[in-house]
Image 1: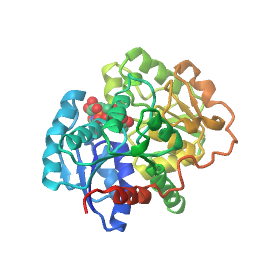
Image 2: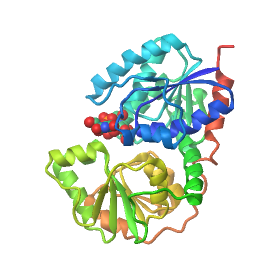
Image 3: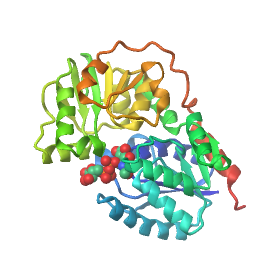
Length: 354
Ligand code: UD1
């Protein structure tokens, strides 16, 4: 069996890691294509190095741009690659523009498409990710769902027959990395000697309007613990364009963290404040109370027992962060860390070519 994985943005490199390892263990031919959507060293190459992912076989080096231009350029490049390799599966991850481009490219030339992290929904049509994931699920031949809730969304949209629950591959890599940093701590810009909060903000809905970004930064700056703000390039660029300082009050801005640094930082944090989907789940799995600056979440399981709280109004962030740490049992809604192995097995079971 031959699989082409298409990745382009930071969280996809994390999800690729356990898949690359499981594919190698199963003796599957695995071609990795990087679209180049994320290209800064600390947004891309460092993840390949830290997580032991083989260098991509192809890098389309598409870079940043408007949604249409970026997706279109990827589409052109991916069609060539898929025609050359003719894999049994194109495997796409999550909800980025890279995912949508690969989904369109594969289905147009009749190459079976499998979507990992299928069935997640925010039901917020303003998010580019929501369009990307809905379009990808409906063009996929195989929807690989991370949770029971995702399976229900797929069934509600008539996709049950093509859907398989495999669990969450990010959980695989998180659990393995948490073990690793517990045994061998990594050097990090996060000072863990005093109580602290880990924060990330990168969604257009939070960064692109100057007044909204200003009020989010105000809220973080006013917290009573040091706030390490791991600044995504979009946040840095928008803050500068709006004339806003990241370095104010309680905030200590730091460059985007490596994956082991992030896991280590969140493991010992008093709280997390974020608008990232992945980080909400990572914080939940690591037991860090989280405040999510959004009005909805795809990872609804994190809300159980109050571990994660949706706080769309920046004025409410301080109260949310100050709430007592939840004690409710978190259970294992995201699987036991074997989703990647199950994913490769499921792809082999459903491959149509001999
Ligand atoms: C993308 C994904 C989002 C995911 C996020 C993870 C889409 C629609 N969105 O959002 O779902 O949560 O990745 O980080 O695909 N930039 C750099 N260097 C880089 C990458 C980006 O400077 O290495 C700048 C670009 O100039 C760009 C901005 O950051 O304008 C945003 O990058 P983009 O890839 O468009 O979207 P993200 O916000 O990263």
